[in-house]
Amino acid sequence: MSEKKFDFSIIMDENETSTPSDIWGDIPIKPDRKGPKTIAVMIFIGGLLILFQAYSDFTANGLEDVPDSEVERLLETPNSQSETPITPEQYQQFHDDARDSGGYLIRSIGLFISGSLVLFGSVNLFRLLSSGPKIATLGAGIGFVSGLYGSHLIRVASDDNLGGALLLTYEIFTYLCGTCMFLCGAFSALPLINARARAALDDHKNNQYQSTDTVIADESE
Image (tube, rainbow, N blue to C red; front, top):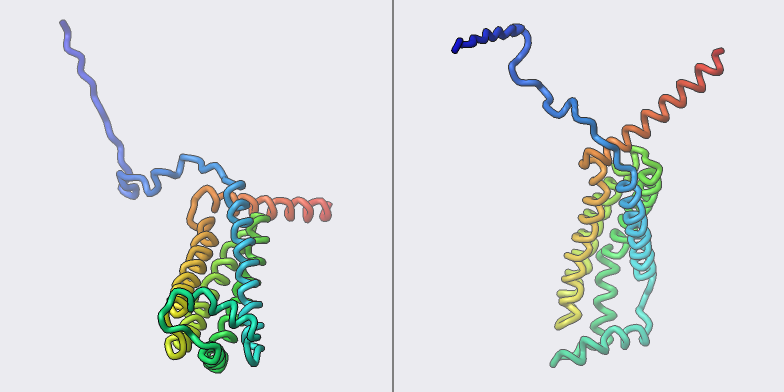
């Protein structure tokens, strides 16, 4: 039985490394156009909710006094669960302190800017424009900062005048506002992180450039 010998020759270029720089370079990434559009619809709804809260804060900031019927409705449930009920005068004082601190105004202005940017960004994202998630993420960041700061000022006013379940409600609302804006920002930034979604945005941008070049070429002819 004869022995087979194999000769192996390895030719390496000194300028090339043994490990390729991008091992995924030859694997095509299929663009996902459905995912970004679904996210666009979700953050569009979120933008509408942000604008609704901004309008509510702006309305509260313009009230000299909360109507007595509204105060009674707001205090009915907390007072039924507390041994020391909150009087209408205490709630009116809380409203005055919250308004004088600028909490309502800061939150309304910040959330109005945030909601507008989120809506505009969601429309661009639905059109698969790369600027969409960037604008929406910026809007969510503005809403996060202004929402937390405004809610903090309102919570400080509630600490000085309220108690029981109603005090806990305003404290929870502060964390809830921050959490909602963080989630909105995370969803807005997702198309920039996900490779397939980013490929869809880049693919759409390349198609736009190709269409523009085609129109220019046709006009030159």
